Image (cartoon, rainbow, N blue to C red; front, side):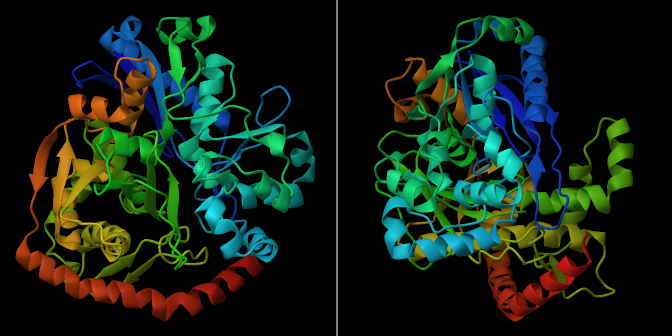
Length: 512
């Protein structure tokens, strides 16, 4: 058995995968996001640890298989900055990938170094979601907290530290620090020096994703129902690990994940640097010797969750009491609406947006609302809007010459037959799901199996454990409808960009 732990934004998922690639047990515990101001998003790392213990204990207790676990692997939300003091305690909340507060620091960094200087090193433009601007924001606005910082790590690294007592990170997560030499897969002394960030903030141990962080502590093992001393593998950021979990481990394969965020992910043989500055992320893959890229939609599934928690709050509680899921109810409503939602178009910019517009001021919009529209169209338009946003990165993939005939679906959006069909129709491509539904946690478990020495490579493990289970073909008529409405979607941002900035200035005046 291999334990995969996925530390996502909405919660922590734990899965037990056996040597045949079968999902034998799982556990889940939710986590909350704190947003004190528009564009801010934080979480308490100690809440992750609480949720991690709950999720793992659920999986081990329900299955009775905990003592058969050979190794533990991680996947985790990327770009979050967990700052630790001399005792290994968080100095404050983690600033998440969603957090947009460091726009001024991004401007300052771009004043220190030009893209021509840093892109060959970082392979990424400087974005508010990355480590460096967040660290500089804390230095400027929370100097007392900054003075206590001794190490900075990522979400999954903090959990690995709690399991082993060892602080380390790995190359896929570190790629989105803006402090890594991405082509060289090592920390960049140039970036630390030019930005004035202490080099010793970085974990001393920078591993490949299959590297061993340490061994499971005896006291923690007893609490979680696991064998003491088993290896804890570094794992990968959620998207590279999800790429492993869906078999995107060779050049030319594209995946789409819809969770809180939405991601288009691909594997390449060398770093992909987009010099058109469209916030296309480039990173070392969790597969040694490979690199990857992704386009990020900040609130894809997050938009559907927002709809759930606002419009469907009462139904959520009532259905939960019956053991039913309100998402199923919302999806059934969406299925009643026609493709295109009769002209109702949704922009999923609830917390700004990344790829390809990189605009922290952008906000959500329902466009084209009429008295003919009801809850079916509202639900469907949110699903369609999130998928339109993802198509913008799919189009960039095609621009770079990647064949996009098959897309491997992952995340919550892959569980819905309707959302898979919407993806196939909007992307104009076949959508495939794999035998293990929880791709990110499965990827973590596969990395654990390789790190434990049970497979010779990540590719070998994926070839052995993964297989396609469903194929959704695009519907020709719906493809035509969505191509038409996609033009509306793209035009809307250009028309509203200036208004988003003006509105953000007004909101800032009245927020205390």
